[in-house]
Image 1 (tube, rainbow, N blue to C red):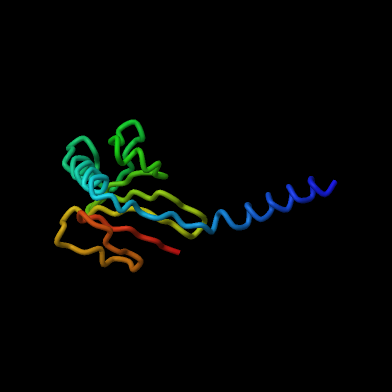
Image 2: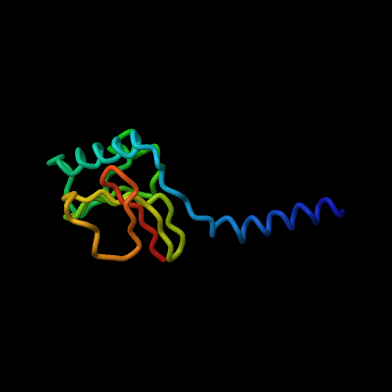
Length: 121
């Protein structure tokens, strides 16, 4: 009886705590460089419309390995959210113009290789 109650308590704690856990960006320079190269290739592809989501079947290998919620290209760059939870989202941002910092929203920080990590809540 106590074992069952204990298991139920563990499940309840996990349900309450795990959604609040935030992911962290990769720090590996080779992975970041691959993400940047793949994002640039997506932006250069004339068959991909700006301001649209890229179908999962067209995600490059490294970007796909991040297991993003979606990949979206717009006029400013590539958005790669890896976790979306109600009003919170975390992900990578690869700007179209590396000299242009992501100033449209707060919550961005550079992680390397011209890539930004964001958390919006």
